[in-house]
Length: 123
Picture 1: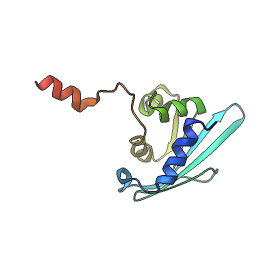
Picture 2: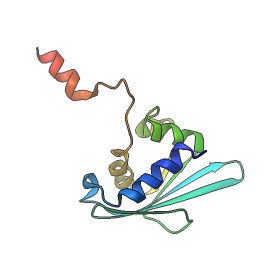
Picture 3: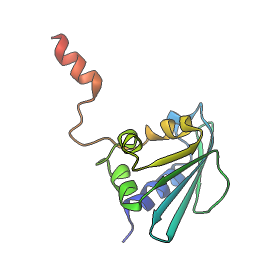
């Protein structure tokens, strides 16, 4: 059985291009640590062109997380910014890259978002 994290990165690699990242350029390495074992995912972004590899290489941004938390992030059950603020996830390097990639993560299924809430209050 393939976990949510593997599906997420394989889908990004299969997609090959992401319009939301057309102004982005850099590399992110996601280090998913559980005990003594670390799984590495390297995401290269070049003006929206994406390439994913499972390797431990130098990167502009390094994100550290437990595998279970990252599964929750890519499933939309957890928020990356909240995890950062709680200290459950770490970032070294260019934080902007993570914030740009964070837009690709699904939000919670019951999320209303600020636009919907604002419109509802206007009426």
